[in-house]
Image 1 (tube, rainbow, N blue to C red):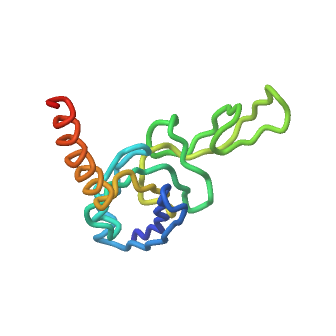
Image 2 (cartoon, one colour):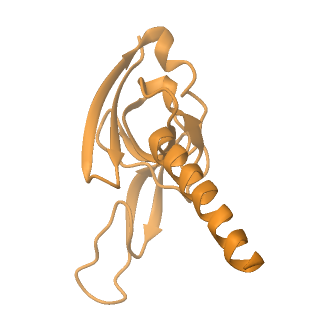
Image 3 (spheres, helix red, strand yellow):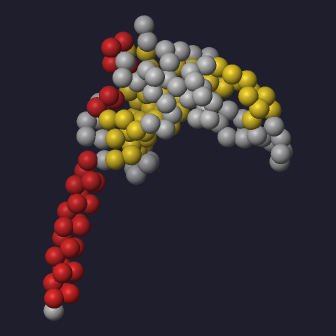
Length: 139
């Protein structure tokens, strides 16, 4: 039984929301990669677009975007996800998870890329601005 805890962050408001998915609702996420943009209906946000930003597996190892596949590997890291160096130039061999979502992943982090309300507001603003500019050009 696959169960995901999904944290969806809204960069505009600075808030986050936790959603838990089980069994059949998890199927659209398995096999997806870090960085992919998905429809928000998967996590209950219809009309939104969400991007996968990372996650962690059942033992707490973080997903790293540049490690390909869904496996756990020991890689040499100089910083970024999975390692915070104390000294400049320090590198360490650390265990991280690949960038593909598998059934061993427990937590998935996402962020909202496109909000339907903002998209409508932006379209209205551009429509309102366009006639004014044309009227100024004609005069």
